[in-house]
Image 1 (cartoon, rainbow, N blue to C red):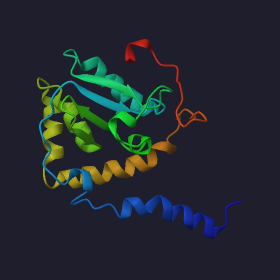
Image 2 (cartoon, rainbow, N blue to C red):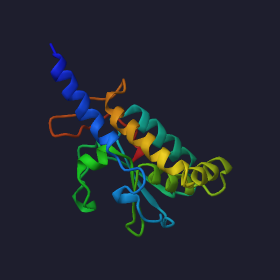
Image 3 (tube, rainbow, N blue to C red):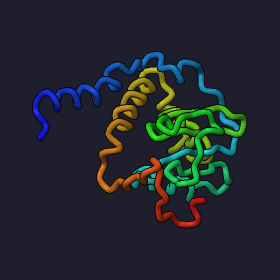
Image 4 (cartoon, one colour):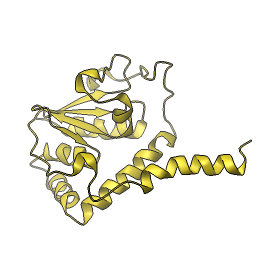
Length: 173
């Protein structure tokens, strides 16, 4: 049974990264975002049903082949060539463009939406989350979601090695 001290310690561990997050100048988003060079590799957690549905939605919309989904929960995924720890890939959505530019979190969504230049909805979303007032709020909201995501129902259990091979449809590769 978890006592009051144990509960408070867990709560502090959970909330501290959210509370201490600098929405004004986060390390990886303190510079202007360059335009992406397509195709764009999208690194998503296939063990997360919500994440998988979102990426599958984009994959179906992507008639031009501008997005390449990469499931980081696959047993054969190796983060080393990208110079990004698996824990970082697991924490938030990543996208890497053809030029090697890395986009994380909300910025990854922005470049995904830019893959659909003919979509008024995606173009509007990308413009909105780039606004100086909305962008810090969107990044903060995404960070809160990223901390809660592992606790969402339906998450597939990880294998002993830290990744798992899930029953994916062959069209996602």
